[in-house]
Structure formats: structure tokens, C-alpha cells
Image (cartoon, rainbow, N blue to C red; front, side, top):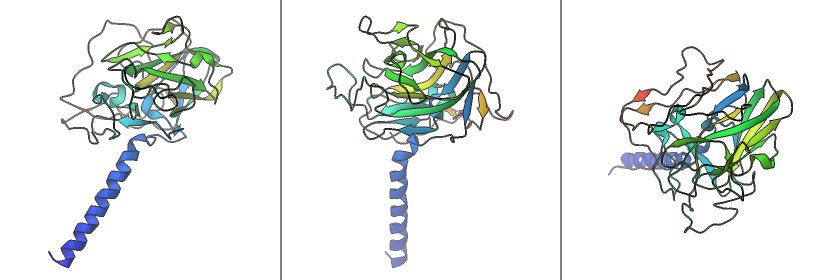
Length: 290
């Protein structure tokens, strides 16, 4: 082998190594800028989970963005990616996932925490036009009993009413608004809410309770008996620009069927007309990173 080819081989090897190192971190980097502000309109606001503008407290766990084309390589992670059936063609998952069943060792402060705001916090800016008590919904996917819990907070505070968000659906994306209590571990409805004291800009936060949780979208509504199914309402934007949805491979399996339900109608307020509001179909590809 000539000296020239040896040098070229060393160069490409170094470039590949740096790219792989960056790839492990890239899925957890925000897709949007800090200028993006969502908007509550007529008592409702919806946001894609992957559209956080900041993430903190990532020493032991962090949320990673998964799309049909890319997935984090952060073992252990005991289930396949589910982004192909997620709203917007993407979701986030808190990894690594070392506790999937009751038989797995529970390590408080690492793979579980009942204290909100301690591990893997996601931040979203929302302009609320109406003050009041907003009930918090989330769309999650779980394949086991121990990957289905988070906490919610607002403006740096973690009220008791936002603790222990609990989901019980299995093997599908499920909307729930329930709080885990001593009386009912599967969660009680109408107890999970955040109080918005006055109109204006606020920061909504979600933090890990159980590692391995897959999070697609969230909704806050003044209506305590709201019901949502499917992908839910589209986000509205007060300021800034949403990134386009991720393309979904044509071979992706559809979300399992469910009973029809009503949901609030909404549209993206400031997104340009050319911006697609639904994920586009793309040729089948294997997600990179897994």
C-alpha cells in the first residue's frame, strides 16, 4: 500500500470515528431553537415531545430522539423503536433502560425517581392566552410494566398535581391523563394538572420517573373530561418555526386500531402553507443506530 493510500485511509478512519462519536449524542440535541413558542388557543395546547428547546439533568439518563431513519444506540434498550407510528414521525425515549419488569433491580436516582425534576428534564415554551387549571395528557408507548411514568412541572416548579403521570396501555401509543396514587397504582383521572396563574409565556417541563419511557406528544386542556385518540390535535405556534415532520417508510406498520373518540380541532398557526402537517412516506430503511 502506498503512503498516499495509507494517509487517505487514516483520514477516513478518523472522520468515521468522529462521526460515530457525535452520532451517539445527536439524537438528544434539540431540533428547535429557544425562540420557538407554542400557543394555547381556546383552552388547549398540543406539542410534539421531540420539540423541546432544552434538556438538562442528563448525568445518568437522557431523552433521545427516535425517527424511522435514526435511533439512538444506547444499550440496554429492550424494545424496538416505535417512531413509525408516532405523531410527526418521531418520539423521544429516556435511556438507557435497565428496569423493564418488577424482577429488575430498582435503583432510585438512576433508573427510577419519585422526585420530579431530578433526572432528564425536557423544556417547552408556551404562550397561554387563558389562565386556569390545565389537565395534562401524554401519549406514550410501553411494552412492559416499568417504562410508563413521568412527572410534569411549570416555570421551574413541580407541584404535587403534576407528579407521577401514569400509563397502563401496552404495545401501542396511548393517551392518558392519570396520576398514580397510593389508592390506585394504575392512576386516577382528573388529578393530573398544572395551574397557569396568569396569561403569557410559561415553560412546561417533563422529567423522568421510569427509564425506558417512550414519549410522543403532550396536551394541556381546560376541559377535565377531554378525550383524545390517534395523533391528537396539531400544535399551534405563537413564534418561531417548526421543523418538518419526519418521513415514515412505506413498509411501516400502522398503529393498532382503537375505538373512535372525539378530539379538539386545531391547526398550526404560523407554519408556512408549504410545510406538511403530516409525516410523508419514504422508501423502507432500517433505523441507524440500533
